[in-house]
Image (cartoon, rainbow over all chains, first blue to last red; front, top):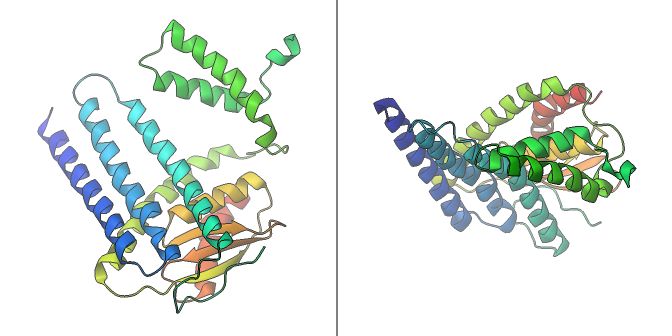
Length: 110
Length: 162
Protein backbone atom coordinates (compact mmCIF):
# COMPACT_ATOMS: atom_id res chain seq x y z
CA UNK A 1 0.00 0.00 0.00
CA UNK A 2 1.37 3.36 -0.98
CA UNK A 3 2.11 6.16 1.43
CA UNK A 4 -0.69 8.34 0.06
CA UNK A 5 -3.27 5.60 0.51
CA UNK A 6 -2.10 5.08 4.08
CA UNK A 7 -2.52 8.75 4.89
CA UNK A 8 -5.95 8.75 3.23
CA UNK A 9 -7.05 5.78 5.35
CA UNK A 10 -5.79 7.43 8.54
CA UNK A 11 -7.49 10.69 7.68
CA UNK A 12 -10.80 9.00 6.86
CA UNK A 13 -10.74 6.88 10.02
CA UNK A 14 -10.04 9.92 12.20
CA UNK A 15 -12.77 11.95 10.49
CA UNK A 16 -15.21 9.08 10.88
CA UNK A 17 -14.34 8.62 14.52
CA UNK A 18 -14.68 12.34 15.19
CA UNK A 19 -18.14 12.65 13.63
CA UNK A 20 -19.43 9.51 15.30
CA UNK A 21 -18.24 10.87 18.65
CA UNK A 22 -19.87 14.25 17.97
CA UNK A 23 -23.13 12.49 17.08
CA UNK A 24 -23.02 10.68 20.42
CA UNK A 25 -22.24 13.90 22.32
CA UNK A 26 -25.15 15.57 20.54
CA UNK A 27 -27.45 12.77 21.63
CA UNK A 28 -26.49 13.44 25.24
CA UNK A 29 -26.35 17.24 25.11
CA UNK A 30 -29.25 18.50 22.98
CA UNK A 31 -32.34 19.56 24.93
CA UNK A 32 -35.26 17.49 23.57
CA UNK A 33 -36.29 14.48 21.54
CA UNK A 34 -36.64 16.26 18.21
CA UNK A 35 -33.29 18.04 18.33
CA UNK A 36 -31.60 14.78 19.31
CA UNK A 37 -32.81 13.30 16.05
CA UNK A 38 -30.37 15.53 14.20
CA UNK A 39 -27.28 13.91 15.69
CA UNK A 40 -27.78 10.38 14.36
CA UNK A 41 -29.11 11.44 10.94
CA UNK A 42 -26.19 13.68 10.00
CA UNK A 43 -23.04 13.50 12.03
CA UNK A 44 -23.24 9.73 12.26
CA UNK A 45 -24.05 9.27 8.57
CA UNK A 46 -20.85 11.07 7.65
CA UNK A 47 -19.00 9.28 10.45
CA UNK A 48 -19.88 5.80 9.25
CA UNK A 49 -19.56 6.95 5.64
CA UNK A 50 -15.96 8.01 6.24
CA UNK A 51 -15.10 4.76 8.04
CA UNK A 52 -16.58 2.69 5.22
CA UNK A 53 -14.72 4.83 2.70
CA UNK A 54 -11.50 4.12 4.61
CA UNK A 55 -12.24 0.43 4.22
CA UNK A 56 -12.84 0.92 0.48
CA UNK A 57 -9.48 2.69 0.08
CA UNK A 58 -7.66 0.09 2.18
CA UNK A 59 -8.91 -2.97 0.32
CA UNK A 60 -8.82 -1.34 -3.10
CA UNK A 61 -5.14 -0.42 -2.80
CA UNK A 62 -4.10 -3.91 -1.76
CA UNK A 63 -4.51 -5.05 -5.33
CA UNK A 64 -7.59 -7.20 -4.84
CA UNK A 65 -9.82 -5.14 -7.08
CA UNK A 66 -12.13 -2.33 -6.12
CA UNK A 67 -14.18 -2.98 -2.99
CA UNK A 68 -17.72 -2.42 -4.24
CA UNK A 69 -19.54 -4.20 -1.41
CA UNK A 70 -18.49 -1.44 1.02
CA UNK A 71 -19.80 1.22 -1.30
CA UNK A 72 -23.15 -0.56 -1.24
CA UNK A 73 -23.12 -0.33 2.56
CA UNK A 74 -22.80 3.43 2.18
CA UNK A 75 -25.59 3.62 -0.39
CA UNK A 76 -27.95 1.63 1.83
CA UNK A 77 -26.99 3.77 4.81
CA UNK A 78 -27.80 6.97 2.96
CA UNK A 79 -31.11 5.57 1.76
CA UNK A 80 -32.25 4.20 5.13
CA UNK A 81 -31.05 6.89 7.57
CA UNK A 82 -33.61 9.53 6.53
CA UNK A 83 -36.44 6.98 6.46
CA UNK A 84 -35.76 5.84 10.01
CA UNK A 85 -35.42 9.46 11.20
CA UNK A 86 -38.75 10.20 9.57
CA UNK A 87 -40.46 7.23 11.24
CA UNK A 88 -38.98 8.10 14.66
CA UNK A 89 -40.19 11.71 14.31
CA UNK A 90 -43.64 10.49 13.31
CA UNK A 91 -43.78 8.15 16.29
CA UNK A 92 -42.76 10.97 18.62
CA UNK A 93 -45.47 13.22 17.23
CA UNK A 94 -48.00 10.46 17.56
CA UNK A 95 -47.07 10.06 21.23
CA UNK A 96 -47.31 13.84 21.60
CA UNK A 97 -43.85 14.31 23.00
CA UNK A 98 -43.47 17.99 23.81
CA UNK A 99 -40.69 19.91 22.06
CA UNK A 100 -38.33 21.97 24.18
CA UNK A 101 -39.27 25.49 25.31
CA UNK A 102 -38.52 28.13 22.71
CA UNK A 103 -39.36 25.91 19.76
CA UNK A 104 -41.17 27.95 17.16
CA UNK A 105 -44.12 26.39 15.38
CA UNK A 106 -46.23 23.40 16.37
CA UNK A 107 -46.48 19.76 15.45
CA UNK A 108 -49.60 18.68 13.62
CA UNK A 109 -52.52 16.77 14.98
CA UNK A 110 -53.63 14.43 12.27
CA UNK B 1 -47.81 -19.00 -15.88
CA UNK B 2 -45.76 -17.62 -18.74
CA UNK B 3 -47.25 -14.15 -18.53
CA UNK B 4 -46.03 -14.01 -14.93
CA UNK B 5 -42.47 -14.43 -16.11
CA UNK B 6 -42.22 -10.84 -17.30
CA UNK B 7 -40.50 -7.99 -15.53
CA UNK B 8 -43.14 -5.35 -14.76
CA UNK B 9 -40.46 -2.88 -13.65
CA UNK B 10 -37.42 -3.47 -15.87
CA UNK B 11 -35.30 -0.73 -14.24
CA UNK B 12 -35.90 -2.02 -10.73
CA UNK B 13 -35.15 -5.57 -11.88
CA UNK B 14 -31.95 -4.46 -13.57
CA UNK B 15 -30.89 -2.53 -10.45
CA UNK B 16 -31.56 -5.53 -8.20
CA UNK B 17 -29.65 -7.82 -10.54
CA UNK B 18 -26.60 -5.53 -10.68
CA UNK B 19 -26.62 -4.92 -6.91
CA UNK B 20 -26.72 -8.67 -6.31
CA UNK B 21 -23.69 -9.18 -8.56
CA UNK B 22 -21.82 -6.61 -6.46
CA UNK B 23 -22.91 -8.18 -3.20
CA UNK B 24 -21.83 -11.69 -4.11
CA UNK B 25 -18.12 -12.41 -4.37
CA UNK B 26 -17.55 -11.96 -8.08
CA UNK B 27 -19.86 -12.86 -10.94
CA UNK B 28 -20.44 -16.61 -11.19
CA UNK B 29 -23.13 -18.94 -12.45
CA UNK B 30 -24.73 -19.11 -9.03
CA UNK B 31 -24.84 -15.35 -8.55
CA UNK B 32 -26.39 -14.82 -11.99
CA UNK B 33 -29.12 -17.37 -11.29
CA UNK B 34 -29.78 -15.96 -7.83
CA UNK B 35 -29.74 -12.42 -9.25
CA UNK B 36 -32.33 -13.34 -11.86
CA UNK B 37 -34.55 -14.98 -9.24
CA UNK B 38 -34.35 -11.87 -7.04
CA UNK B 39 -34.85 -9.50 -9.98
CA UNK B 40 -38.02 -11.40 -10.81
CA UNK B 41 -39.55 -12.00 -7.35
CA UNK B 42 -38.84 -8.73 -5.51
CA UNK B 43 -40.70 -6.45 -7.97
CA UNK B 44 -43.52 -9.00 -8.00
CA UNK B 45 -43.86 -8.97 -4.20
CA UNK B 46 -43.42 -5.22 -3.74
CA UNK B 47 -45.59 -4.38 -6.73
CA UNK B 48 -48.40 -2.98 -4.57
CA UNK B 49 -46.13 -0.44 -2.86
CA UNK B 50 -45.04 1.31 -6.04
CA UNK B 51 -46.81 4.35 -7.41
CA UNK B 52 -48.63 3.65 -10.64
CA UNK B 53 -47.42 6.66 -12.54
CA UNK B 54 -44.13 6.37 -14.43
CA UNK B 55 -41.26 7.76 -12.39
CA UNK B 56 -38.23 9.60 -13.74
CA UNK B 57 -38.61 11.49 -16.94
CA UNK B 58 -35.22 13.15 -16.89
CA UNK B 59 -33.09 10.65 -15.02
CA UNK B 60 -29.82 12.04 -16.38
CA UNK B 61 -30.17 15.00 -14.03
CA UNK B 62 -30.02 12.66 -11.04
CA UNK B 63 -26.20 12.33 -10.73
CA UNK B 64 -25.80 16.12 -10.54
CA UNK B 65 -28.48 16.29 -7.88
CA UNK B 66 -26.81 13.53 -5.88
CA UNK B 67 -23.50 15.37 -6.11
CA UNK B 68 -25.03 18.51 -4.63
CA UNK B 69 -26.73 16.50 -1.88
CA UNK B 70 -23.47 14.71 -1.01
CA UNK B 71 -21.62 18.02 -0.75
CA UNK B 72 -24.39 19.38 1.46
CA UNK B 73 -24.30 16.31 3.70
CA UNK B 74 -20.63 16.95 4.46
CA UNK B 75 -21.22 20.68 5.04
CA UNK B 76 -24.28 19.89 7.16
CA UNK B 77 -22.31 17.56 9.39
CA UNK B 78 -19.67 20.19 9.99
CA UNK B 79 -22.28 22.80 10.94
CA UNK B 80 -24.16 20.37 13.20
CA UNK B 81 -20.86 19.30 14.79
CA UNK B 82 -19.99 22.96 15.41
CA UNK B 83 -23.33 23.58 17.06
CA UNK B 84 -23.05 20.50 19.27
CA UNK B 85 -19.52 21.34 20.40
CA UNK B 86 -20.13 25.09 20.81
CA UNK B 87 -22.26 24.56 23.92
CA UNK B 88 -24.91 27.14 23.03
CA UNK B 89 -28.53 26.15 22.91
CA UNK B 90 -30.03 25.67 19.44
CA UNK B 91 -33.13 27.50 18.22
CA UNK B 92 -35.34 24.65 17.02
CA UNK B 93 -38.51 25.18 14.98
CA UNK B 94 -41.26 23.25 13.26
CA UNK B 95 -41.76 24.56 9.74
CA UNK B 96 -44.62 23.70 7.41
CA UNK B 97 -43.19 23.54 3.95
CA UNK B 98 -45.62 24.05 1.05
CA UNK B 99 -44.90 21.38 -1.57
CA UNK B 100 -44.96 22.22 -5.25
CA UNK B 101 -44.04 18.66 -6.21
CA UNK B 102 -46.89 16.21 -6.52
CA UNK B 103 -45.27 12.93 -7.58
CA UNK B 104 -45.05 10.57 -4.56
CA UNK B 105 -41.52 9.43 -5.45
CA UNK B 106 -40.39 13.04 -5.86
CA UNK B 107 -41.80 13.91 -2.44
CA UNK B 108 -39.99 10.92 -0.93
CA UNK B 109 -36.70 12.02 -2.48
CA UNK B 110 -37.20 15.59 -1.27
CA UNK B 111 -38.08 14.42 2.26
CA UNK B 112 -35.02 12.16 2.38
CA UNK B 113 -32.82 14.96 1.10
CA UNK B 114 -34.15 17.29 3.77
CA UNK B 115 -33.45 14.71 6.46
CA UNK B 116 -29.85 14.31 5.32
CA UNK B 117 -28.95 17.99 4.87
CA UNK B 118 -28.25 21.10 6.99
CA UNK B 119 -30.08 21.09 10.31
CA UNK B 120 -33.42 19.78 9.08
CA UNK B 121 -35.37 16.54 9.51
CA UNK B 122 -38.62 15.96 7.67
CA UNK B 123 -41.18 14.70 10.15
CA UNK B 124 -44.42 14.22 8.27
CA UNK B 125 -46.34 14.71 5.05
CA UNK B 126 -49.91 15.99 5.28
CA UNK B 127 -52.63 13.61 4.12
CA UNK B 128 -53.33 15.61 0.98
CA UNK B 129 -49.58 15.70 0.17
CA UNK B 130 -49.50 19.49 0.04
CA UNK B 131 -47.46 20.21 3.17
CA UNK B 132 -44.27 18.80 4.57
CA UNK B 133 -43.59 19.22 8.28
CA UNK B 134 -39.91 19.91 8.88
CA UNK B 135 -38.07 20.12 12.16
CA UNK B 136 -35.19 22.55 11.92
CA UNK B 137 -32.45 22.23 14.50
CA UNK B 138 -31.23 25.80 14.37
CA UNK B 139 -33.30 28.21 12.29
CA UNK B 140 -33.44 31.99 12.52
CA UNK B 141 -36.63 32.26 10.46
CA UNK B 142 -39.12 29.94 8.77
CA UNK B 143 -38.95 31.77 5.47
CA UNK B 144 -35.23 31.23 5.23
CA UNK B 145 -35.61 27.46 5.67
CA UNK B 146 -38.39 27.30 3.07
CA UNK B 147 -36.48 29.44 0.58
CA UNK B 148 -33.29 27.41 1.00
CA UNK B 149 -35.01 24.09 0.38
CA UNK B 150 -36.97 25.41 -2.57
CA UNK B 151 -33.97 26.99 -4.27
CA UNK B 152 -31.53 24.16 -3.69
CA UNK B 153 -33.54 20.97 -4.02
CA UNK B 154 -37.17 21.30 -4.99
CA UNK B 155 -36.46 23.37 -8.08
CA UNK B 156 -34.09 20.68 -9.37
CA UNK B 157 -36.53 17.89 -8.58
CA UNK B 158 -39.30 19.79 -10.36
CA UNK B 159 -37.16 19.86 -13.48
CA UNK B 160 -36.61 16.11 -13.22
CA UNK B 161 -40.26 15.21 -12.72
CA UNK B 162 -41.81 17.67 -15.16
